[in-house]
Image (cartoon, rainbow, N blue to C red):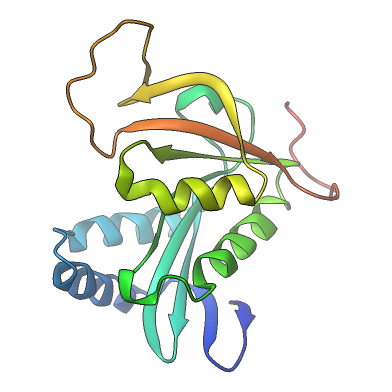
Length: 185
């Protein structure tokens, strides 16, 4: 399915071939991705657990986002809210509006299930652009503080590893309620 399209950008459902394209591009970017990770996400999509979206810019895979239909971990578990997971735009394609369009599509899908969408964002500087973007889009910290590996950190606790698992959770009220939404909140 296509969620957005203009002369340069298409936001569509992720396809199996996208996984290898992202592995190649992220490797070139200096990261260490795993094809098995993308295959796992495609399996979760096939099982109906998540939506997996790819941004294609000028014919090249440029970014992706996963939207799980219900948060199963963290402070939002059991609330029936969709959660945005692993949002990424390749460095060479950043600052072109691609991330915003991916988020628009994910939020539109989320609005079919709930009036609220949530996410977690890393706290190190490599997540700085995402942190700013989420705030500008209306995401608000949930107030539960830092979490590490799905466990809430407590005051004066030492967290030795600042990695992708050290996160702060945010939520956003979505405009306009739709019939059939899960209203557990």
